Amino acid sequence: MSQPWNSPEREITPESVFMTRRRWLGLGAAGLAAIGGGLYWRFRPGTKEEVLGTESENPPGADLYPAARNAKFEDAGRKMTIDADAASFTNFYEFSSFKEVWRYVEPFRPTPWKVEIAGMVARPKTYDIDDLMRAFPLEERVYRLRCVERWAMVIPWTGLTLAALLNKAEPLPGAKYVRFVSFDRPSEASKQRNRSMPWPYTEGLTLAEATNPLAFIATGIYGKPLIKQHGAPVRLVVPWKYGFKSGKSIVRIELTDEQPATFWNTLQPREYDFEANVDPDKPHPRWSQRVEWMLGTREEFQTKVYNGYGEWVAKLYG
Ligand SMILES: Nc1nc2c(c(=O)[nH]1)N[C@H]1C(S)=C(S)[C@@H](COP(=O)(O)O)O[C@H]1N2
Ligand SMILES: [Mo]
Image (cartoon, rainbow, N blue to C red; front, side):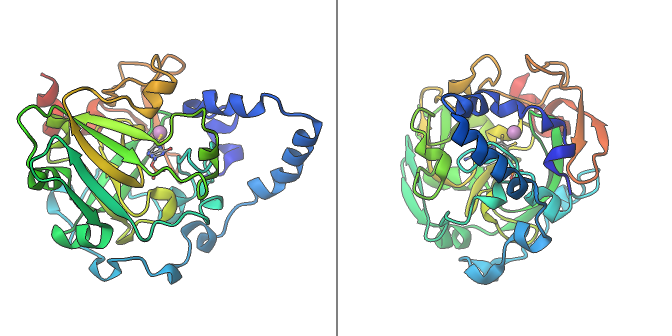
């Protein structure tokens, strides 16, 4: 498993530099001692069971998994990432600005859960997560996902196309964008107690991007319901864009006529733009985007434009 001390993020966690820096402000000697005491706990590697959690929580829709794999997205051209390698190295800033989010998600309660489809649609609807999983046929898709920090993974997601969900809601003619809103529960997600951050996490796509057949709503991972640190019980997966576009634990999907503000663009507009398509020729202001490395194996690959999904999406940007 990738561990924090041997990862390229050892010195900085690029996406979160801004957030991490803030935590140190105003920290006294007592705070520093507490950090020292916390270090062993933080860096002790987790067992596979700790990282993946137990199934005792009996999530809704468990009977629907595993779903049949869609043959068009069977082979991502690289080895699938091992489940515990993906689950032990995640970005979920509501819980931590480090990667071992699995240590901090215990208080999070993804059941019961509702997702609202709202805004500029003829048929707004609030789905109970269990109904959502039964209203649309679930399928499995193996996608590559590339974080703007240069790590990448190959994941079997279970879910439905975002297009199916949006079409059912009947977007109105003036709708141009789709806004995704994550949960806001400071009592369950400790980093949300910092109200100077732009919580809840929000993301957005153009309506044309959102209705592209690649844009996916995931309710499962590795043939089972989503686990907390991957965004239980429902998240977005947009494989041709940097990972931060794929919002986790979504409660509201809203159609709008104006480009919505997003979490990262609000914090660091110079570094995280709205479009955020994977592009090796467009460096991040603080690092090159030419090469990526795989979670678990650390194998390196040249990054491809649109994360290699140009045949599906290049036409959106012609
Ligand atoms: N709500 C929410 N969604 C989020 C994030 C987050 O911090 N909060 N991090 C994003 C980032 S930066 C990445 S790279 C992907 C990572 O997905 P994974 O941790 O399941 O691999 O989730 C994205 N979705
Ligand atoms: Mo990311």
